[in-house]
Length: 171
Ligand code: HEM
Image (cartoon, rainbow, N blue to C red; front, side, top):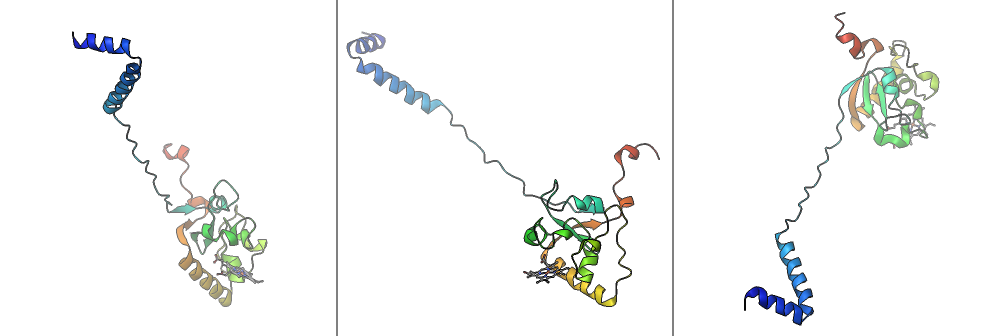
């Protein structure tokens, strides 16, 4: 009697052998099937690219608009004040400074709206500030320098990046 005949007889005489055969097949199949190996998906840490911001571009970083980050300008420098969201967020006491050049307000210790230069006007030169006001601004600036990341420079509109459509026009 061949092996196949023995197997056939066994299967016909005892139905339990069907289950045992099926289990055996399953074990053999599992043994030869490669286990899929999933590599952990690496996520790049968030990076901030240092760049120039015009007043209008800075405005987007007021914590309300498209950007969730909050940036603030102090004496031509842009700071990421997102971690101070309690101060500069939409409901914060200094929310007026978010996305704006706060220099004049810091110099005069006022967060009133009239301290802010409209974003379509050239940057505040601060030339009219008194010695005391400049000192106040200097102290605030040192505070920001020590607490927040310096992420960019505040520039006037005309120094904004070249319009791509005119870049190749030969003008
Ligand atoms: C009624 C008067 C004021 C009170 C009671 C007050 C209170 C405070 C307090 C408690 C802090 C938090 C300090 C900390 O935790 O480090 C703070 C921070 C600050 N205040 Fe005032 N403040 C007043 C007026 C002003 C004014 C007029 C300005 C306008 C320039 C101003 C601008 C700031 C700024 C920029 C910060 C720093 C927030 C930061 O670290 O990012 N404050 N103030």
